[in-house]
Length: 78
Image (cartoon, one colour):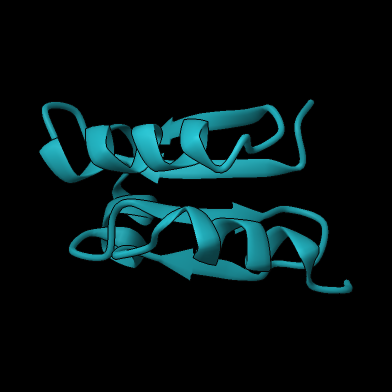
């Protein structure tokens, strides 16, 4: 199971952009979780998606982010 999670919505153009940014940053493997499927996630992430979360330490990177921000997020010590 990957340590990174991308919280997103169905039919979300910002989420599609975030996927492209993660590819550009050469992010390690991550899981995608759709907040639309869970009321508790919808309540927490509703208007914040897309959000990249490090499951190991709980850090989160909210949109908007670019490849440099993703690389910096991944490089931060845990």
